[in-house]
Length: 276
Image (cartoon, rainbow, N blue to C red; front, side, top):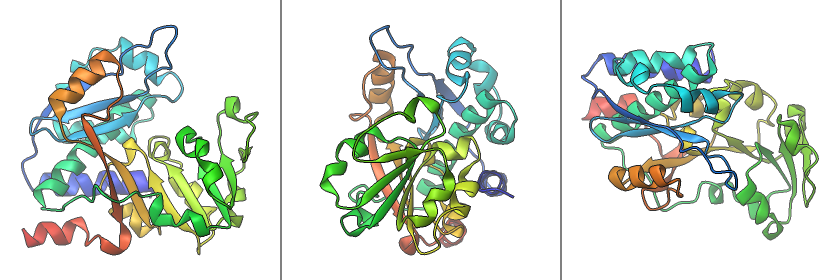
């Protein structure tokens, strides 16, 4: 069993116990102009406004997504679309994770869990006192501000185009380099390619670990069960505003907000549902 399969089982079990809102729409990244960086995240929205992001930047997912008819996904029952997470087809897996994330946001909301929108998940790792930091995935915004931290930085990146990057960091494709790190930041896209378990198996058991990114907006239970300390992701706070931003190919900031969930402050979705 992997994190992703455990997430699917959890959402299917909880979803079968209550009526879930149907899928309302699928928002594809707007195709980039020749001078723009490609937009790589899509959104699945449910009828109650709950939304889930998914990463479409792996392999040929983006080109296939832009060519597809959204109704092939939106006409499916919500839980059937969640099951796509376990497909061997990369596009189906990506959209399925968007649906799983949307259902997760719905379940957290209906269970009464208040997402912490004020805390920076990276800040919870206390990077200022870190000796060696591992970053799984090339987080350009964090790397740009790396000079603010005293520790050494090792970036684990499988995409060959990043391996020749230079700066105050080292880039490698070897996961075993994580064993020397006392802090680890992992991209949420490891859920889509189902590599999170492998990454975590290489982490030092004493390291503080965070899973971050828009595609990590799922229920954190199976992730915390595997020792991750912090999950930081993005939720939609203004869906009409986000729709306009996505259509225009603009940044999401005005339609979304970031949030943080820490393992020591999270009671678990089953306990919260029993209490409602």
